[in-house]
Image (cartoon, rainbow, N blue to C red; front, side):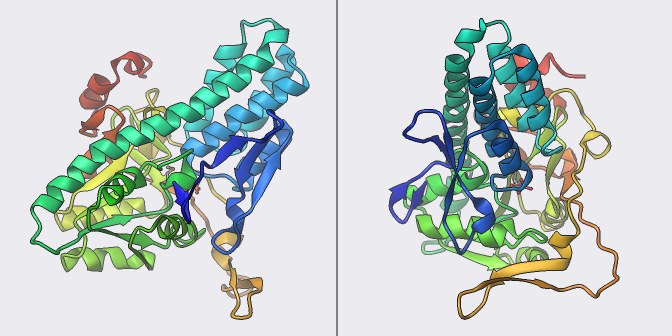
Length: 368
Ligand code: MRU
């Protein structure tokens, strides 16, 4: 997507042909800065510290992390050790394991001297596939938005509510939840996005708002608790979120707070869609509430906030009394019954075992 007219991806190779550039998302929204990854430990640190985040981008960074590992030492032992290091970085987004498995499968049976070239080729393919998948999600989601727009009175805009950041910053490009929005906007639709701030880490306020703004998409940041009120007053036409892992039965694990949005949408008869690239489907599990590991992050994300002061300094302050316990669950699971449809690269399907298996028959055979 564009940053003030210049097209960007979130991850790319530097001119040396081997080191990896990323955009440091911990500096948003006030600083745009790139960082170079030169070792597998750099890649693991980038994922664990959330310099990169969002399920598809975590997968893409892990793929390049394997390249950096193989470049340093193409032995089987080092391949396994890099896999373990990268896999341990974050627990919930299934794209991490998917990408590592893809890389290992591509390299395992090759001679050591051929591994580096193949690794960079496969990582590049994973990134390019992500872009194409999201572009397709954009096309299929655009049809939903166009249908809503066709039922509006002239001059009425389409209002989408989204949670967290499932935008291009969470992927290699386009985003998952935002791909339909960017497609519709690029084609001239009068569209507006309600952006949940997404406490505790504020991915909506600091990332989604930043990227929509820099591409030119009209949007309004709201506190997380506002969505239900907007829905009751006819100010939301549909909800589109991303997902970090969706089960074979269509239970959607996504950023904490997504479940509450789905409940409010159900109560107000508002469609609740999920942008779902197929690498985010975990065909080995069905019951998301029981079986998806939910990351618990540092309580500092809840008790402290970072922002820019009026005189331009970036400061972190504490907002919780000393001595209060703090809990920080990073994700929740929205049961399939609350999901109107899954917008995949192959089209929109119901959140059910049958519909998902029909859409992706070649992968559904892995199902538990
Ligand atoms: O903890 P994060 O920032 O890595 O959370 C992931 C997300 O960005 C969202 O949950 C998103 O909706 C799914 S990733 C496209």
